[in-house]
Amino acid sequence: MSEKIYVGVDLGGTAIKVGICDDQGQLMHTYEGPTEVDQGVDTVIANIEKYVRHIIAESLYSWEQLEGVGAGVAGFTNVREGIIVHAPNIGFRNVAIRSVLEERLGKPVKIDNDANVAALGEAWAGAGKGVDDCVCFTLGTGVGGGLILNGKIYQGFSGMAGELGHISVVPDLEAIKCGCGKMGCVETVSSATGIIQMAKDAVERGDHTSLALVDKIAAKEVFDAAKAGDEVALRIVKRAAFYLGKAMATVAAVLNPELFIVGGGVSKAGDFLFDEIRTVFAQLTPEPLQQGVQILEATLGNNAGIVGAAGLLLRS
Image 1: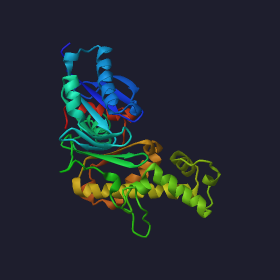
Image 2: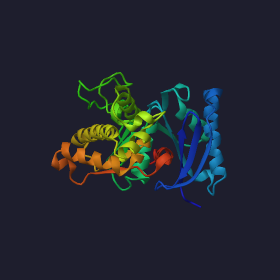
Image 3: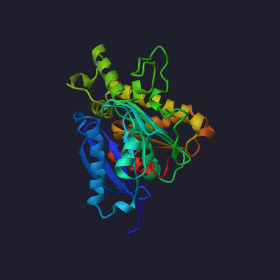
Image 4: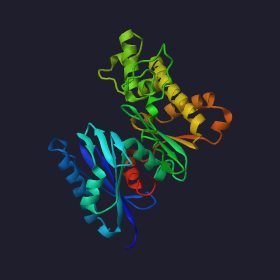
């Protein structure tokens, strides 16, 4: 077999997921093992090496076919130097992971943060396949993002480009403080955390809502209540969608992407959420900047990070 393969590593606090991709981004084999953060940095790096070697050994491919390894991690990364500057969930601080793994594996290694690699995965082999310019929003506990321009991740001068959750969109009188320390970020209203907080605030104010009967409110309960006609829940969903659409309109004015991809747990609300986002985007974006632009749900799910990490070898 002469086919070249690429391994992606999704480095999480609990598990390390690895996958083999071909040069078109097709995920052909996956493996998962414990991170063992409590055992220290050396053990985590040793586990990455072990799992990469394991997945090749149990696959139909040979070590010689492996072109390189890419890794995505939740945290601050110095992409150019291959250093994980700070990744709290795995206890890494200023770890030169690229050079260490290259020495251990004898293969080229690239790294990036998890939001960027997930965006690259979707752009390479998911909802954005065949599109050179797209912007990805990931709606989870926070709002992550990634910019894919000319088919590659756009890093910015210090590698911090794509922090889409921290676009300030909420007016001062309505704004609350974001975890980043600033006011009015889209993350405060369009993330699962933001949606849950708005629901809790409504219940505490005594608003008439079925959410008052829910013991532990999650974003899904808010969407379910809205779909069932709960006016308070519907107002919350519309607010989350409005500010996400507003953020997209801002990005469109700067980058003019062909496609916006929305992933993460909140995106599972489907057309109920997406129709509202599209409406707001159309209202706030100048006509020439919205022509031909689509807003689609991500398709790779939890595999986006693995696929995108593998894609770092070809598209970064």
